[in-house]
Image (cartoon, rainbow, N blue to C red; front, top):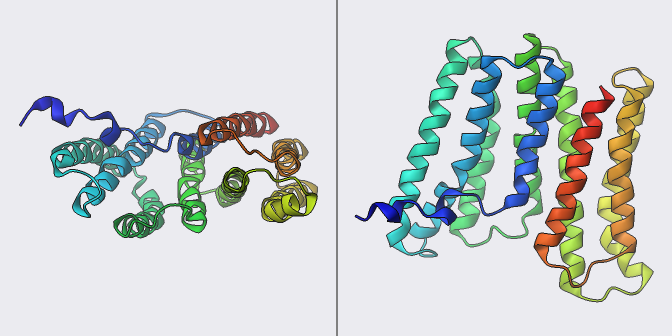
Length: 272
């Protein structure tokens, strides 16, 4: 076997580049609110990154076994699965040794959603699965409370509030991007009724997010400034509904949403 055949970029590196923000944003927010960066925080960070990376070779292996990719790429898929799986396992052991083994309960929902996704891949039906994508972001958002609890060294219930706050933004993002892609598939969307029909779901979700954060701010659970990042996303959703995209590449849509998500993360951190 040629060693070079193991180092295939499309087997090792996730192809859905926009999904990185759904992992890194919760991690950054959780680490920031945790207040300190410790060796245990590094264990969590590396374990989460390796766990995220291992998805690509595993999905590739399923595609190979289902006849969607050539079997010559199977050694590379198995190699990178072992590499990323090994790195994740070593750092999970570090978490256990340091007394944070209870955080592994947060992995169980991720395993369930991932198995569901793999079955969809096997059946060649993984595209446009909005519900699965939203559940996947819910799983990735669990890194926020995990990082927060490690930083504070407590099981502060606010961690669950933090998880919900991060996840509703990610879910709204998924709905918004799906709307933009639907606009692109339909071509020219000229009348206001069609634009409203495509945007009603994302607008409702973004509006709910703003209202929910406002309620939490009024009862003192979160600072009032936290409304700023959610208002940013709400404004982007309104703008995207009224200004449909018809010719932009999907990558351009993803890049714009990436910029919005980065701004959201910065504003969220500054609010605290």
